[in-house]
Length: 607
Image 1 (tube, rainbow, N blue to C red):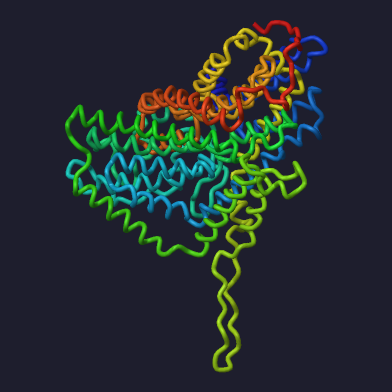
Image 2 (cartoon, rainbow, N blue to C red):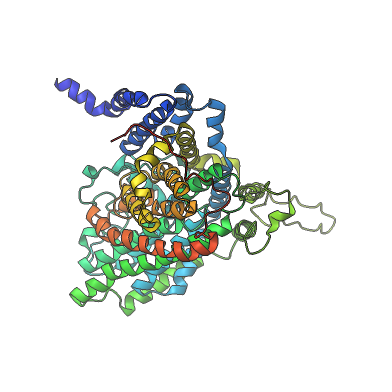
């Protein structure tokens, strides 16, 4: 018996992964024809949810299950369901990720970050705001995990510089910037979170599973131990508070900044794919520009609220309690000196940095002015409906593989000597770099979510769930979105936000059609609330990354995150009725949405 327990303890994941499909097998027989496929799709959905939450197999591989199970169960043909993995929104994400990779390769993000920190000054609350602003802006265009990994080493360097040489701080080693390699290794230590790609420099790319077992770090203080800098336990309570605020600011700003644009986070891309697949007549209704008119101001308001909340909890309140200020002229001068030194070390802007910035700004301009709504947009010069936001994204990605990293220079022959050979040509991006660092798991996430949503729709499971929520649909529209938004917000604290988006978006779209409410009035809040995951390390990859810094306990994240959940939800609802209404005319039911008021269906109760 003891041997069996030992085997189960080691191999519980594959054992459970094999048992779950068997235990859930009766779901295939819940419904009678012609609604058999609804139960079968629910079977696949529950398997994937358990695999996601329990991390039984690699999450990107879990996303491939629809391509296997849907054809086997007769839900959808293999050739059709496989097309979901490479839809227009997937190509948009690939193009955006390649541009983000070029930003990282050129180190443009470091120059921007240090320039902003020099501008905002060295007061604690302004440093906090500076980091949140930088991270939020980066995550609008770069994957949230990547933006967090870019900014956290800079935060750690600031903390080390802030407290080095202080008589009340124990020094373990010469203070240095913590490299991305040590951060990614520590993530593996605290939750067996796998790296998908690790370059020769030790940089981390890819996404992190939503699982960080607390047992390996019950206090949250001993994970990294700040191997190259300050011993966190030796800091005073005030110093610990400010350190916590800085590392939390990176994760929170990354989560918030991600929902500002269509390419900012995976759930937005899922939303775009589901919307375009469900409403094929809604040509250019949901574009980069129209979504930004709602998402950008919402994100800015939530960033400001998060900054005020962290400042109050970790700077103002501790000062009122102890009357000890964290700021001093000596500290401020040391921080200014460090920022100037680090910026000077970068040297003048390189040709690669300038090129990447120009390409990036050009791409944003092409996205914004493709079909902005207030003017025709450049896509009107081409055949109607043939151009999408994926077109400029992929085009600029191709340019990055052609544009030289160094300025081409040639010398004239002198004294009859032959013309010297020009320097070796090297493009800004190479396939070798992409093969090492490109987060293919994100592509599988998005494709799997779209395939799952396609199955939910084609099987009739959406109608079943919608029928069970008929009582909710009869409520006032505002009450519906408040209830659903609260459910999604707190579900994403413990479950995959991509799973929540895949499940809830088709359901609320169906509810909106039955009630003849603008579908975006329900879909936009659900999409944004998938990013409101602030309370636990397991909620998002950025949360897990900053938790691995060793500065946080789970209770720290919960206390700081709970006010953000409610505050950001309120701000989002306010933005929906102002900016969202202006961008999408949410008061009127659109002509491109189907009328289903008189369509009813009867299904056996699931309760």
